[in-house]
Amino acid sequence: MPLPLIYLIPLATGALGFGGGFWAGSGVGKLVKLSAIGGGCYLAYRLVKEMK
Image (cartoon, rainbow, N blue to C red; front, side, top):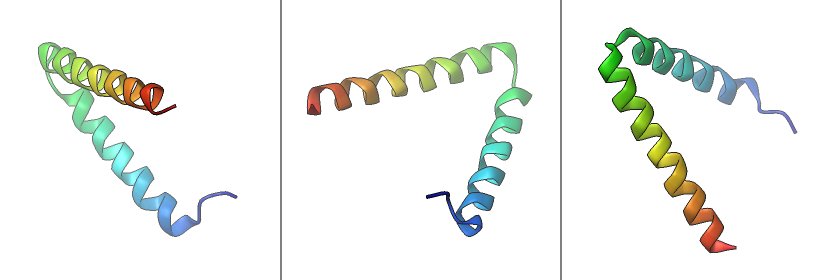
């Protein structure tokens, strides 16, 4: 079932705002942010894997 528009619009605007803010930073800042996002994804992966 697709997401209703009332949920999709705030998610889309939030993603655009995050993307704009993310790419506006310096090179070092981007690297730090990518590292943090990668670390969070890895922790989430480990958590899901251990729950199975």
